[in-house]
Image (cartoon, one colour):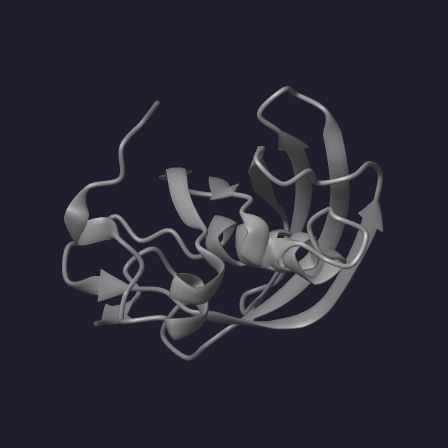
Length: 146
């Protein structure tokens, strides 16, 4: 497993990330693997992870895939323009989700991502497609100052 250097950790405090509990396991240009250990707090009335948690993983994996920045002290940011999620199988509490995000060609300020989510047993959970718009200055690998 590739480890993310501390300087490359997602910029700024994210109360939402802390609430949900996801983090990047592998992160490089145009690619990310986000992981989330499913806990009771993620459970819906049916006893599995809420669909919103799964959709969140689709969104963050797509977002991170396009926002890799290899330069210490700098960051890239984007906003979600469109997101679709296809639910395939249950996300069971006690399992770990692995969301793999890959970018696809886009324009100067817009990028597209394809996302696949499996659990730690390799069972398919969901897929997704998303469109993101880079925030000003984030269109290149140089990004902007943190």
